Structures are given as structure tokens and as C-alpha cells.
Image 1 (cartoon, rainbow, N blue to C red):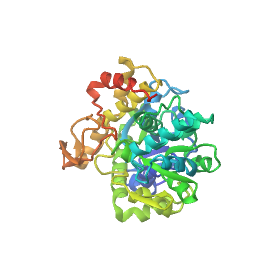
Image 2 (cartoon, rainbow, N blue to C red):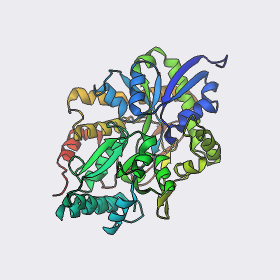
Image 3 (cartoon, rainbow, N blue to C red):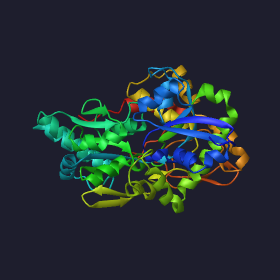
Image 4 (cartoon, rainbow, N blue to C red):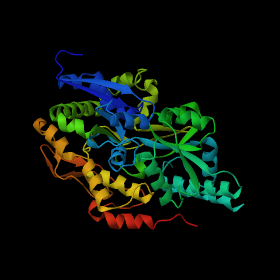
Length: 435
């Protein structure tokens, strides 16, 4: 331990590239320069991360965006109040399917363009065709719907998709995409839980037909020749939230100076990670066995946004993953509240005034502002925003320097206004898969 360290902090993380800001803070000296001795522990499942936070093994951790809400709403085995003072970035996930499923979707019109709408329609058609006898989220959903119904018609088991945890952005964005394309994720497919590092192997062995996960585990399946990326988070909901820093509230309350120092270290680390000049060094750090343990070449897609989709197709996606730009680290309360609406939509929690208040209080922009204010950096003036309303990069009110937010549209054109949350929840409940 450095003799100069004022604060000893222990954090867990999962072997995903979106832990890079946390890893770089510890490995490249950003934490040390803020007087922090940061100890990182790699975990094998999100459940382990959640439980080790609850019992006090970790002060904080790389966590799924909805997981702290689940902890505070009583949806976890071990009660632990957890807060979110920092977001680890925007985007970074993909939906990857087996080559066999892709062939069926392609026959129903899916293209290698990442279009969620077209892919969803093709999947729906495929599913229902079986029931009866690109990468664009909309087009991908159409293709997937077709495949699902074809399988049902033939008496085959429903397609099985994996996500990393029930209370994850992956689960909620997969369900959102499917439902918007007319596929009922509660009836027409099966959703199972698989830890991220095992996703590609589960696909290769036929245990699952597809999955939604962060990088590099989509590119790993493409590189192995066993999977095809059909759409991406950045097309389903542009510049949308993913992983966060989850902190035990009791520790945060007792150690405000340590937490503020950590948030400043993470800020400097995130800015460094965003700079293309540092991507080679960052990939080298993440390639170490204690972090990802995968060669830098497999990591570059998330850094550049240039993805190999499978079958020789390639695409470059704007804002595929942002570790810093466009207020990527700000813990918007509207992000937490959107996750809450999905928990309600899929029956994970009841919508009550008490639960809404818990969800609203989970993300803590006040702590973010307090820690970073001495740096004179741009800080959003609001705690929430209307999600889905920005179609182009937009300058917004901020303290300090100017601040630009990226486009944040949902692929189906929906808008989430956190001030109209009751209407949004009611409207979502009325959306059913087409017969």
C-alpha cells in the first residue's frame, strides 16, 4: 500500500470492458493521486457482486444500472441500501444470436445493418411461421419474431435467450426491443441467466440461441465463428445508461471525503479512457489475466465502435460506448426511474408511491456535483431529463464549461418523461405482442 494513501477502498468488478474506468483508476494511478489505495476484486457473477456489497466485503462495486434499485426495493436475498453517485458510461451492449437463428432471420428480411426494427420483425415472423406449421433494432426484431413463431408452429422449444441478471439493463433492453417488435418476451421466448464470460460458450454449444451482454463477449462469439451480432444497445436506445458505481450507503455516509476523492479519481480516469490516443494502452491493461484476459484486438471494437457482425459484415456505430463524453458519468435520476418503469412493467416490483420514492432516491447526482465542483468541470444543472427527446447532439444548461448531450432516442420513437411516470407505466402495460 502506498504510504501516502489516506483512504483504503475495496471494490468488486466483473470482467467486462465497461469496468475499464474503475480498472484504470486503480492501475494507472488516478486513485493514488487522490490519496486512495484502491483494491480491485474480479468476480464471476453479478449475484456475487451484489451479495459481497451487502455483507460488507466491498465498499463499492462495478454494478448493473438497475441492481442498486433492486437492492433498495427489497428484491435481493440480503438487504443492503446502495446508492449510485457515478455512471461508468453509456452504451456498450449487443444482442448476439446463433448462426442458425441468423440464417432464419435473414430469410425473413433481416439485414446486417443493426436495425432493431427490421431485425425484430424478422424474428417475429420466424417465430410465428413455425407456430403456424441490420442490426437495426426494428428490422432485427421483425426477423426474430418470424423465427420465434416458426419454431412454435413446428412444436419446437421456444428460442432461449440469455441475460446476465434479472435486474439488468440487458434484460430490460432485450425485453423492450422484443415487445416493441411485437414479440411477447414472457410467452414467446425463454429468458435465462448466464454469467457474461460464459455466454459465447453457451451459444457455441447450443444451450442458448442468443444473448444480450456487454463487450467483449459479443465480439468473442463472432471471432469464434459461432455468433452473429443482430443489434446493439446504441440503436435500441441511443446514449443510454449501463453500468454504474454502486456504493453501500452506510459506508458513503461514514466516509464522505473518501467517496468524493474516489469520484474525482474516476472522473479523471474516464476522461483518459475516452481519449483515442490512450486506447492502445487501455486495451493492454484490460488484456491482463486479472481483468479481461483477452487480447487487445478483441477489445478494440468497443473502443472504436467498429464491429464485426459475423459472416464478413462490419459496421461502425456512432457512440457505441462512451466512458466520458456527453455527461456519460452523471447519475441521472431519469435513468434510475426508467429502469424502475421496466421493473414494474415485467412484474418485478409493484408501482407504489413508496417504491417510486425509493427508486428516485437511489441515484445521487448531488454527491457527483459536490465531489467534482472543485474541478470546475461542466456539471448538468438538472437531476433528470426527458429521455428519448433529443434527436441530435444538444448543448444544455450546466455549471462550469459548456456541456453537450448526445441523441437519446428510442428506436420505436417513444418518450419517457419522468414527471409523467404513471402515464408511461400505464401505456407500457397496454403494449402486447401482436396475435
